[in-house]
Length: 335
Image 1 (cartoon, one colour):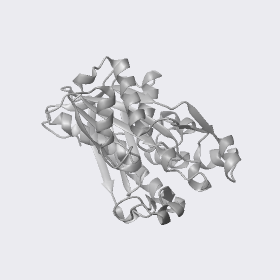
Image 2 (cartoon, rainbow, N blue to C red):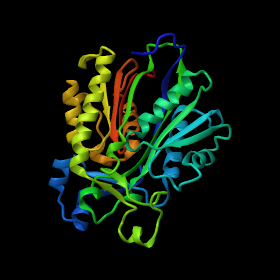
Image 3 (cartoon, one colour):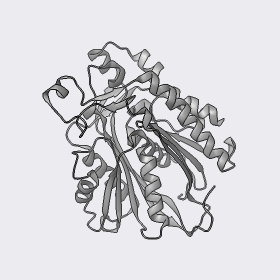
Image 4 (cartoon, rainbow, N blue to C red):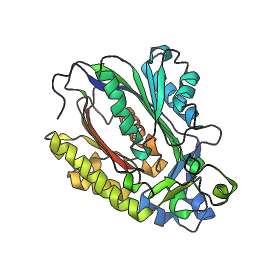
């Protein structure tokens, strides 16, 4: 349940996103690997993805924050904290947050990166919310940005069809009206799943060598069947769990905002929650799996299309490598 005696909730008060111009449709994948449009759509729901041709994760993140500022009137010097959720940082160090801070001119902000794969935005949103709820910070930017094409093996038909590049950002601010904002979260990790979805080399356990490069160990490795099985259960269970914990019926929920990994996982989650398909945010068909950017990009697009109203209850839900998974319950606070 929501914490008692809280002075503030953290509320999303502005949104922004950036989608690269280059589109990779299913026809492109038919031309490079043994697959076809019908199979990809039936198995994943994906029709198109975007590719960042000139630039990196921090560039997309900066563009998303600039889009947020342009549409909200937020000035860069007002930003106090920048949290970037990503698994594709420009480099090991410094953090993408430092690069974004410089690119947008947020001279008064500090920040850091958070790595939780496809659950990254949820983990970052919870972290940002707690900074706001503490009373220490009033303007916290949370960005999900991933250049997945940089770590995708385009000879592996099982993974290359899934991923795209995207960034989206939200602004968190305090609200004293506890009827609005982020009300509850359930977040989990289980490290026993570490070898079902990971990058085999490039870190301190297995630094880059000729061997690791030759073996393509710097790309995404996924045991698709294993991940699908646990992702369906994990996302569906945690979404149902947060509803029950907060005494929410399906009628009380305006939208499920699921991580966009696979339409079959999304459908299973909605079914477990008893939520009809028209109350499920979807953009996987146009962007594919964009890791930390899926949830905030859905929120940005649906809000800008007038589909989210003040007072709407949203359930955000994700599952990712680690394993990591979780759900957040919030009530929309802006018109």
